[in-house]
Image (cartoon, rainbow, N blue to C red; front, side, top):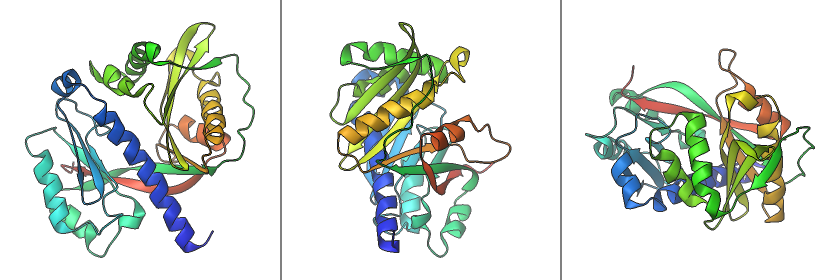
Length: 273
């Protein structure tokens, strides 16, 4: 893959993730916005997500800044203004393509620091490898959205109302949601969003009682198969970094599913410390 194609691939996998989260916000009901303090906006080609009543860097962060236009000092100031008076902390997930001379200096001068990197993964549309598991994968219909949301929130210990909010996307165009079931009992969740020729795989979580039984591997395989059937060329996901002091099960699951590391994406967190 030449440099131009590699850059375009990075832009595609960043875009499909941002569009997935944009739709999560667009599907929110008034009760979700009120309960969680949801706000989202586009800024300088990126997506700024906010949940004022949730202390979480997953829900309070910026995606895609610096990719469609340079990440200027003025844009950083606009981000700070957006979050002023809101959550106690937020992050800018900064793709390496957004780097420019002086950017780290500008971030540090405004009270940002980086402590954590996400690892972005990518794979092509090769068939999924077989997974050995006694768990059964089920692609769900909208009627089961409340159950999916409740299980997701339970596993992730999410704030009240967040599971119902995330599950509003069940049945929406481009979205697929899944259970891994032990018999008839759902024990793990996953989701996929397809946009154009790219798919983002997210919201994977398994009950502690059923971990190491192939739930996430099976969910990866089902989503990869469904993505290929929809004409997807590239699939992406993200995990914690592949660092010695960080639990690595998500990394191992991604590798076994045929994903390859694309790049580390640092989270610049405000306030520092």
